[in-house]
Image (cartoon, rainbow, N blue to C red; front, side, top):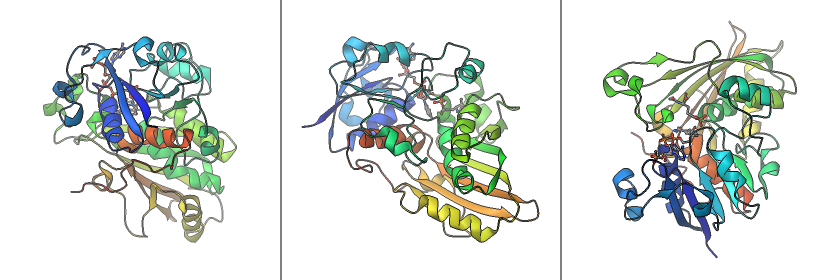
Length: 342
Ligand SMILES: NC(=O)C1=CN([C@@H]2O[C@H](COP(=O)(O)OP(=O)(O)OC[C@H]3O[C@@H](n4cnc5c(N)ncnc54)[C@H](OP(=O)(O)O)[C@@H]3O)[C@@H](O)[C@H]2O)C=CC1
Ligand SMILES: CC(=O)N[C@@H](CCC(=O)OP(=O)(O)O)C(=O)O
């Protein structure tokens, strides 16, 4: 019997990508689609790349509309998910693409998001140690942020093998879709095209505690993270360049071996052949994560680079991959691994 899935926030970028992937999922039938200011509109007016759903009309977001489905994807602004999720029973698998249930530390949540902490759900990054076990059979999933997905996958093997000191420095570039559809002055075409710019500099980005949470759990000790995001003139993609001081005695062969071991059975993470480096264009539209690592012997630092599509593995692909695990389906079902380059 088909799995009935509803999508809240279906007019947005994340909701649109969830729908693109669900349309290719053999076990899923798409149920209610909801929005906020665009309720009452035809989906075709807002997501013209989804012609199969063009005549569907968006309903207002509310538990009444979303109940009665097997799975509900929430692709809503931060702070909007808890009220909806609270109204949905444990018979519904709720998958939150927003941040509300990602952090374990309520104090960190309050510092970075400025509201009361809603709680913590199993974390939808299956590749992290222990994550698949927590996702199996769960009825609630917190999908990671797009930057934490790219960064955690680039660095966790170094911490899992105790190769790196507990301080990481990260500079990551994101495509503009990461900021959502709502118009923002700094995202106007004339501001973004032909230019790159940093934002959230100096430890202010809300994904910093999420990265620290993931890396600290793997390292078994607190890892401090210095994170600088940058905006790149492209619609999709994240390139994360991450480094950490190597522990004494670490060799290039040891680093390579640790990464090969961490990713050998991963269906979506590709440790590139030595000498090849990740590029966002190679993973566009794909749930793949391309990773490369090197030891900078002169500086004594491990340097790892990852590329993802922020909307696919960074949001909707990670959500569907986690859904598959929660429902006991094959993990790769309905998910693209090939990209669309150039
Ligand atoms: N873009 C990305 O790369 C990533 C996004 N996410 C997360 O996914 C979520 C959605 O982001 P994104 O799609 O980019 O954002 P968009 O701005 O593109 O879409 C937001 C969606 O939420 C709806 N919405 C807005 N306000 C409300 C409200 N008060 N109540 C109910 N629905 C509302 C909008 O409806 P309407 O159009 O009718 O206003 C729209 O469907 C966010 O939590 C974001 O953090 C996570 C990882 C990456
Ligand atoms: C380019 C850009 O603006 N990106 C977003 C991150 C998008 C994402 O993953 O975020 P959520 O935590 O909102 O789910 C940002 O930096 O705020």
